[in-house]
Image (cartoon, rainbow, N blue to C red; front, side):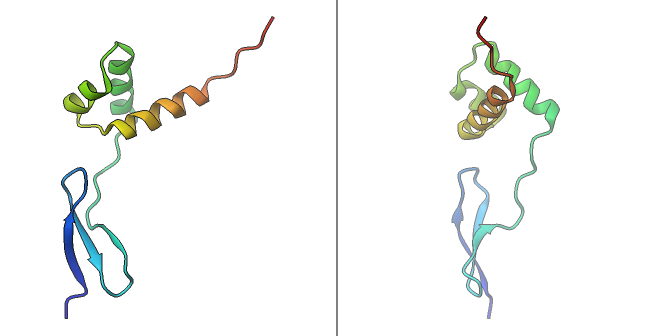
Amino acid sequence: MIEIVKNGTNGCGSPQYHCKTCGAYGVLEPRQDYTEEEKEIILKAYQERSSMHGIERTFGVCRQTLSVWLKKRRNSFHPLRPR
């Protein structure tokens, strides 16, 4: 009996699977992470006043992913000290 069955697709269009043995859901071949160079290009496009929807259409990056990158970048700066 086959223990892994197809269970629809995720937001990126990759097929989701369900393991009947352990009950896990997931993608068998997850998409590769973005390189640091790709992240920098995308973040620079955002800084040049492109909208999040525009970046999503142009680069294929999910808005939630872009939001996480922006939050990490914002938190990496040192806070300003009052004079």
